[in-house]
Image: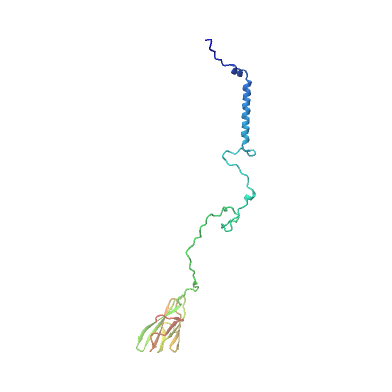
Length: 231
């Protein structure tokens, strides 16, 4: 047993010395704080300065850019052949608020044919105030009795004149029944009769005459210049 050595005991002076000397702990703490302070100052200087008195820009947002130079702000010239929209000047950079983007084509209706004929300005033709209607009342050997019925379509009493033309023969007599007789004037191949009394408004009167060896169809018959009907 005399030949074996004992293992040396661990020295207990290290922890005991630290415990007995607190200034070592304080000094180590001061060194650590100084190192952390330098690290923080370096990190702070590496950031971009914030605006005057404003908060630093939030992370993820784009930073404000410097204004463009005057040459960059000048309008871009338009092409010579570019179409211009209505209401826009050549230097306009966008549409005005009231300018529509698209426009509808105008509605085209059916073509209207031009009218070349002018409307008639003449008033509608009124029926004659006094008219006549011819007929044969009686025919016999050697002659016949004819009649012209005068009709007054106006609203007042009117006088009248009959002109009668016949072929061949001669006028024997003429009369109006039941009224004063008018004036008869004969001429070659006919006669005229001017009324002795007016025909009443809306009424009629019959002028009769006796012709010998004359054709029953007259060559002409008028009342106040208006052609008679009935032949």
